[in-house]
Amino acid sequence: MSTFKPTFQVPKSARYLHVPFEYKDEAKQLGAWYDPAKKSWYCTDKHTSKDILIQMFGDKSESKLRMYLHPNPENPTVGPDGGTSWDDMKLFIAELKGIKGRYDKERKEWYIYRNHPKADEYSEYEIDA
Image 1 (tube, one colour):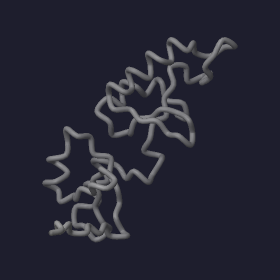
Image 2 (tube, rainbow, N blue to C red):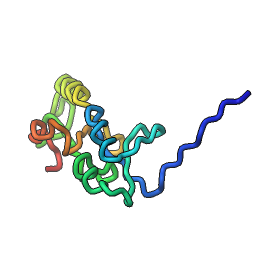
Image 3 (tube, one colour):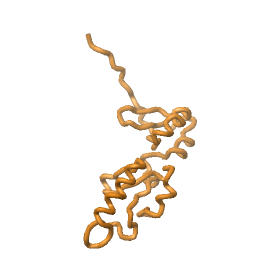
Image 4 (cartoon, rainbow, N blue to C red):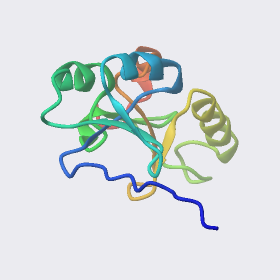
């Protein structure tokens, strides 16, 4: 006997949102849907609260909503020849992980979203301000 698993089809117009876990209930109340495959909340272009959801949580596809961070933004290098020491960088990364910071594999840099509750506190570490 096989178990039936319904297929889940995300619309092509899906706009994925950056919804921190502590705000998932607000996103759901505004009508956002959860995509279990991508472990991310989304809305569509036809969604009545789309603009509010994007304003509150940001569209993940828009990189301008990201704040790329470094403990020494004027010289964002790591190593013995200037910039930041490896130990300082490890502490900074641990701190960012603690606030749910993320790593961009293409840029090889850490970031948080501009709508993050602690974005103002970390603005001094922004690289591309």
